[in-house]
Structures are given as C-alpha cells and as structure tokens.
Amino acid sequence: MFTQESFNEYFQQLLELEQMMHREASELAAYLPEGKYSLLMRHVAEDEARHVELVEELIRLSREA
Image 1 (cartoon, helix red, strand yellow):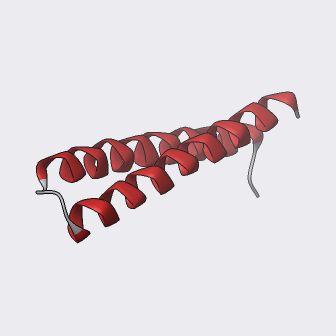
Image 2 (tube, helix red, strand yellow; image 1 turned 180 degrees about the horizontal axis):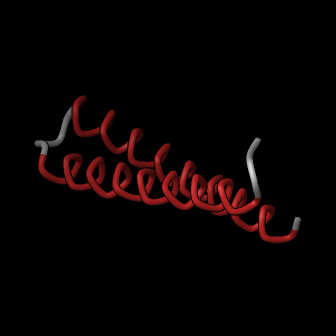
C-alpha cells in the first residue's frame, strides 16, 4: 500500500529525473550541428520540459490531498 509520503518521494525522484533529461536533451541539441538531429533533439527537450511541468503538477496535487 502506498502512503502519502511514498507518493511524495516517488514524485520528487521523477521530477529530478525529468529535469535531468530536459537538461541533457537541451545540451545535446545545442551541441549538434543544425539539421535533422538537432531539430529532433530540440523536440525531445521540449517534451521533457512538458514532463517536468506535469510532474510539478502531480506534486502540487499531492500536497493538497
């Protein structure tokens, strides 16, 4: 059975992972020469930024419960 504390810990770990993925995808997109790979990597970075926002919302909702 999950507790509120275990949910909070999980969401925090997930947030850290998504932030790292966003940071790394952004760095790789900046490193790659302009072209298909760079464009796709920028899209990945944008997706990761949305994931960060979603997890932040989960954390906010979890704290309200």
